[in-house]
Amino acid sequence: MSSYDYIIVGGGTAGLVLAARLTEDSSKRVLVLEAGEDLTADARLSVPAMWPTLLNTDADWKFKTVPQAGFNNREIAFPQGRLLGGSSALNGLSFTLSSKANVDAWAKLGNPGWDWASFSKSQAKSYTLTSESAAGTSGSGPLQLSFPKDTDNQWPKIWQQTIATLGFNKDGNPYTDQICGPIFVADAIHPATKTRSYAVNAYLEPARDRQNLTIVTKAAVEKIIFAKNGDAVTAKGVRYTKDGADLTATGTEIILTAGTINTPKILELSGVGDARLLAKLGIDVVIDNPNVGENLQNHPLCGLSFQTLDSEETMDGLARQDPTALQAAMAAYGQQLGPFARSGTNAAAQLPFPGIQSVEGKAEVEDLITKYIAANSGGNTSFAEAQADFVRSVLTSTEEPSGYFMSFPGYASFNQDGTMAPPPAGTEKYFSIALMLTHPLSRGSTHIKSASPTSTELDIDPRYFSHPLDIEVLSRHLRFIESIAKAEPLVSHLQDGGKRNTAAESAGNFLAAETGLEQAKNYLRQTAVGAHHFTGTCSMMAKELGGVVDSKLRLYGCPNLRIADASIIPLTPKANPQATVYGVAEHAASIIKGEV
Ligand SMILES: Cc1cc2nc3c(=O)[nH]c(=O)nc-3n(C[C@H](O)[C@H](O)[C@H](O)COP(=O)(O)OP(=O)(O)OC[C@H]3O[C@@H](n4cnc5c(N)ncnc54)[C@H](O)[C@@H]3O)c2cc1C
Image (cartoon, rainbow, N blue to C red; front, side, top):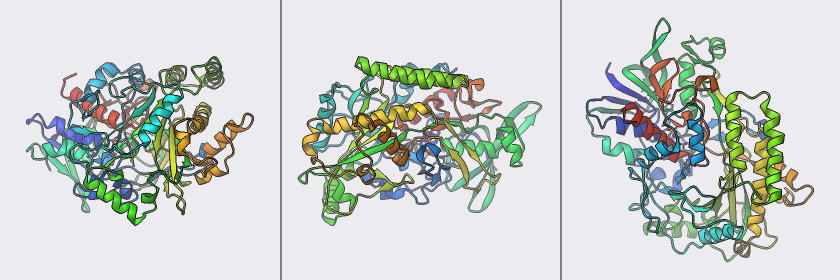
């Protein structure tokens, strides 16, 4: 049995950043234990557009929520990476920074050193964005980002001009400025090779040969081994299984980076969590902290697809596996172009509460806030009040987005259970607009249901739309999609009276004066899903507010155990979270090394 300075549990997005940074000091021995396999050579991983083929395979934890009352009791399936590189190895590649307001709100929860000014410096250490535009290069880190090279793809321009028609500034740079309006989002795709840039090739490969780094894959950590001396608790090591053998590793410090669902699972299995739950499951309580597994946050996601003119170029042929479209896409990829070489969600927009610029819009948002935030505040914990304050500041601002829109030239819809739906049979072509609520107030939880480490049954309950303001805001943004689809130049590329995605066909007119809003809400309850953006279950904040770790990421009650993945994020980022997770891991490495 070997002993290490640091044992990193989970070789995913954050875990590999920490492995690389901590082994820069050759005197520190680091062990990484990763439950999944190393699929580095697999084309499903490296070719950007192939990531959906990894979902529902052994490279995916294949989680599922409990029935969601706010989603008409649907259970929503969702993937999380179970392979070296974690979710960075199978995510949708979109690289979006969160906002200054969001991160500054983390600091206010009792987290000195986690304001935007400090955090954004750490985040910039993770990526390099190469851009041929006037914006130049930003960031200085190992992750290589790029924009698609295609010059014959008209859709991003159409999108940008359409959002500009609706009154938004189209010249903002989301990597250097805090902006509302149309944005062009970079991909985690290497500009030279047009292959996925992620935690393995960006962080691990340059460090893999270091003598002080040991990576073990197919090693599933079952629990943390603690020692108790009076009230003092010390983490001594971890118990894990590999190839059927029960093994133990010991270390001076343990760092949990198993992700938003598995990190609290490991803590609870190890006796850290709500004493009542643990006692019920027959687990000895080491640290009683009912906040473990709570504060689960995620973006509700919905969308609409509109039939385009037959003459338009879209991705529908490819989605229907038309051999000609497939061949063309493969040939284009040979030139580092086309749909295989990009995420497909580059043309996006971050927009404020619809109508906030007008007197009526301001009054509408104030009414909603008074009705739903004030009405709820009586029973709120103080975290809920802090969260409501933050959301109020977003909703009442013309500069902060409450809706994040992604445009996509092709059919994009979800099955009832949250998995992607193929386009309907036929030859129709579509343009889709997907929409996320940037800062939901609804919060849920994830907990174990059994003391068995091998049980995959978890009680994952995001409680989508449990806060009534969420559906009020999202339904208004959904109506705004109708306004986008009616604006020039986009409207000229869509069929007048054309088809929509199947669920929208019978959903009614969201813009109808009397009934539209209610129809939009019904559509959301029937069709919304969760994005793959879970955060918050081991939140970094004062313990009395609901915290699990302090601002140095130390577990309350056990200072030599840290958590440094998406689970520590107390208020979910504005949109796709990977940039924020890389930033968290870089910041964590600096804290551990005593650099900040
Ligand atoms: C399908 C999908 C698409 C996404 N698309 C985007 C996108 O386009 N843009 C974006 O910004 N974000 C996206 N995300 C979200 C983003 O990828 C994640 O938020 C981020 O990668 C989470 O990083 P993490 O380090 O917290 O967890 P992960 O990267 O998931 O790492 C956790 C690691 O721990 C391992 N592990 C878990 N339990 C154990 C155990 N018991 N023992 C050993 N190892 C264990 C896991 O196998 C995994 O490798 C997407 C996520 C998914 C799943």
